[in-house]
Amino acid sequence: LLASGAADGQVILWNEVRSNEWRMIHQKFVPGSVTSLAFSSPEPYLMLGIGGGDELGVLTVLVELRRGSMTPDNWQVKSIPAHGGGISSLSWASASSPVVFATGPAVSRASSGSRWLGGARRLATSGADGQL
Image (spheres, rainbow, N blue to C red):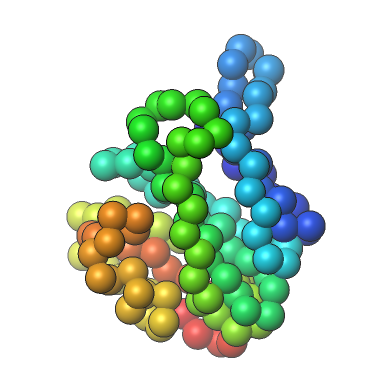
């Protein structure tokens, strides 16, 4: 599985069907340009964090609903404003990691234990607002 993002806000998920042959399996547009992409570990389910470069700094998370299904409807989408001025970078830590670097409004929403961020998952973001 490969993710690509562009300045026009387009994110595409690709699946390799044969050696050097890729097929688009999902397409999503986010506000502003795509500034960062990061897959989580696949357990218990795969997630893709997408950082947006617009003035709202929207964090979008795609959650795989059915393991290994390559259909376009296999991804749940959630978006939250994370950093005013845009997201500079993002990174996942495993659920077993004792270190948590993430703070701010995105984390307080995520810590509610909802399925879409996996409860125990950790996601760190940095933004143009100077916050981590």
